[in-house]
Length: 186
Image (tube, rainbow, N blue to C red; front, side, top):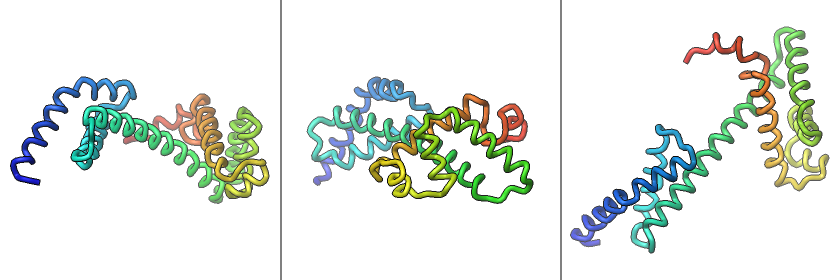
């Protein structure tokens, strides 16, 4: 690339950004991206655009679609992090020995109550996977699912369980929200 070509590319990118600023804000608003994460997503989209600048036929469309894709990935990661944290918390609580048998009984009682409000297939899947320790292929075999779909169904079931926990006021599996607020200090 010639030295004289480089500033022209930067200027045209700057012009593109000035022109698209309202549309970029609109995309971020449509996906309800928090302000503290919005700048990072725009920067990621810009890096992708700059890397492909020479081959992009329509930079405006490329940048907007790339930003939309980054927004979708952002929410997917956030949702998965929530499910994984609940998933990990349940596994840890079920796998670690609890000091008092009464505490374990109360925990299992709370879990069973939460599970009872779930659809039957979710109850069965969660009990097989976490209660009995089956892996995805064993769960698929027992429930008649294709092995690749177990993860998707498990994620939906974990979402339903998480929803049950939130609606009942549980921020941790065995502690109601009122008691937990006092103990948490950020």
